[in-house]
Image 1 (spheres, one colour):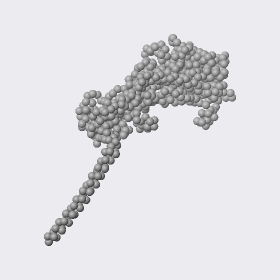
Image 2 (cartoon, one colour):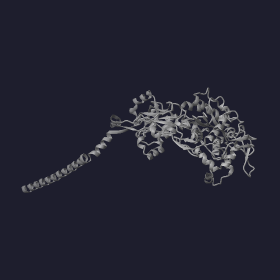
Image 3 (spheres, rainbow, N blue to C red):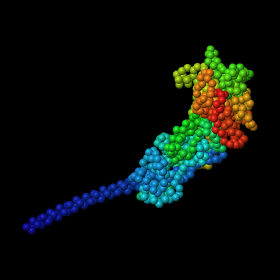
Image 4 (cartoon, rainbow, N blue to C red):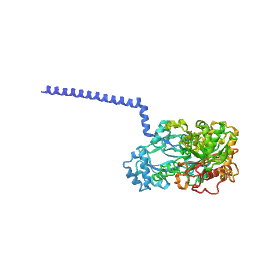
Length: 634
């Protein structure tokens, strides 16, 4: 029995040692695995995991650059920046956004408009982006929320850079505006490769120079390496790369001249473009009615948007660029020059004007604006009295192809290439255009009415100003531009914008002189704008125009008082001065204004007086109804 007990003891001891050995081996294997994993993580993958750890501890925060200023030619600020507090919510960090907004409203005022704007921005943004709930908080409001900030996870106060247009509505169509970046903007930034430069930026240029010069104005985004705590709050700045501010734009526009021109329109609709013919500088760029660009910076509210967008006056349309109108009789000096240069009307050629024109073999009368005609008319007098009959015949003798080819040199039917986006090309009709557009042949009668700026011909106010500037510059066409120089923030150097001559038509001096004399006579007794030249200390070469809006039947008399105001003729006026050595050339269009000499001419005179003489008008021009007695053509 003792032997049996000893035997069992030995077996148990053996089994115990066996188990202990197996366990020891397993422990050693596990420690080996842990040591191997530790070696893999700490030695082989050390750099990778160190980077991840640093990224958890360090945040790369973008620093938005100051946007460049926009200054007029005399240094008057047209667009600048300021800092203001904003209250922002990151929806992904907030459990109940609506409840959070309601609680915030108990501390600082949150209006219904704030809520609407927040919802609009939230719909346009990603859930992880911070979205402004209130902008332009004052110091007291910012301090009050800061005391209660611990209660609102995902809500913070930020100092943001805001754009401001101190001149308000003045020149809004040329300055443009910035607004929040949307999905379409993001796609364009990705396409252009500029997306990385907009980290932290909320706004981008949407129209006018703000859009055209976005790359220069925006600047270069900077960055800070910031150490953050477990709650995501910044502890200290580790390193910093400062942003580079955007470049400043210096304009050719004189804000005082711009203001005089805009006020001269009163409440009338229309456009004015004034250019220095020698270098293409745009001196004034007016589209009426105008609007306040500041409305768009924080996102325009629905009430103001509807007021602007639904207005019959269409204040958001950039008329100098996008408004298209028949040129009417302002076309005639260019047609006259075409006749002279192509030897179709060589002095002393003249006609006896019966008050109408007949095509060979046709009884249809193309009427002159003056019943009974103008008597004996040569080229000079045809321009002065705006004789339709003379230009009907001249256009027919030239032929549409020759006429169109010549007028192309003055920019008709094509974009001028001005440094602002959205320009339309107008229309200079040809038989080829009509065949392509309407699948119809060209008729001689269409050539006839093209000679007086009617029919298919359409121009923008900018084109018309560009054309008269080219004529004033003896056929040398200089590309119009609004920016004269760029002040580079990186170098401090002011870089002038080069003057670009895009076409040069060698006009004969004697022909130039003849057309100039005809246009100068327009503003003298007997001309269609004699009142515009009255009392002027300088000579004005001009041409009035009246463009039909609705057609008039054969034999029917035009009666403005019988028409709805928006169906009345447009008033046009082109001019350059001084006539002998031009320093300014301009085009004015008053929509439904009637006669060019009485509606558009006085506006041009105020602009020329101030630019040439420094003479400001004594009082703003009165808003006048078009004279019901004005002729349908002039």
